[in-house]
Image (cartoon, rainbow, N blue to C red; front, side, top):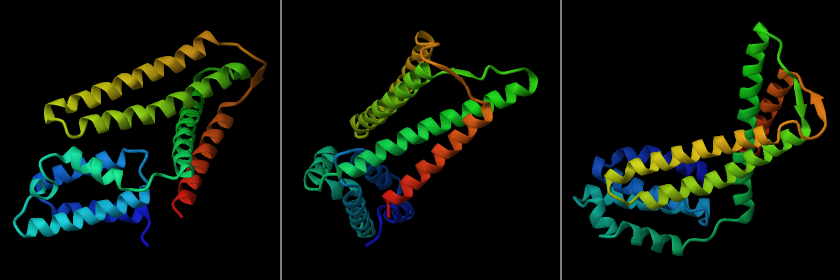
Length: 225
């Protein structure tokens, strides 16, 4: 049995066989199904591949995606989702874990690099209050979890809407990003200096970021084997 990642890669290649209109409609169905966290990923990718094969065959016979999927794409996709197995809780946990590890890793890596460059020109304050750092990390975790739900929800509620509404996806995602950033900065500001203080060199933070990204990569690979 082909893995989900292999099916995704094959799907990306086969979609090039569709004409522009059919690809747009099929991609909408694909996004709607993939952004439903309730659906088992393996089952979803197998179904999407099967749909793509049949749509390519229909296209070769002179039919278009509208004939294939019917008048209501959302109703068609909802019916497909209702008959698919639900995602394993372990897989959902892996999704959240990898997202949080990746977010924390890039944050630490960026922070370490920026402080490393600043230290070339002037001394950098290497003191960190453990309580404040812990609260900032918790806020990042919260923003990461909420962010997944928000972005997926925005995509699912907009994917079958007229093209003029696509700007709302970008606006709402951008607003969430700004609110999330402001929230993390606010936590750091209002809870500054909480807890015991330790010194951590910029290169240690950089290494921590690399380790977190490495662990994130490892967990991602294990989850698809």
